Image (tube, rainbow, N blue to C red; front, side, top):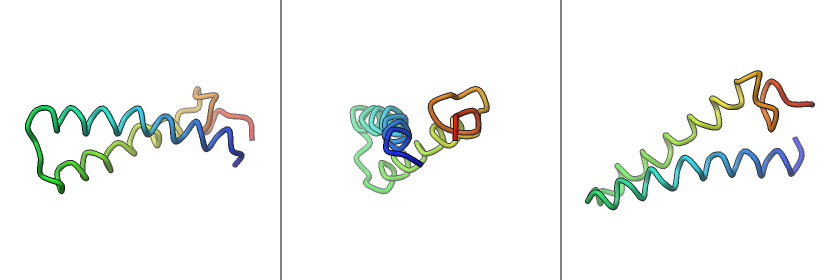
Length: 64
């Protein structure tokens, strides 16, 4: 896996993780465990994209 694909994966993860944690915190949720779960559950988005054969950036549909 090259650097470009790793950056694409990290960007996808950040787009999912950061807003979800910020939204919970802004809503008054300050429990670190809950915020950590939200941060970790954001792995679902890049994992889902990696399994999508139509995703050209990375995943099953990307050039190897």
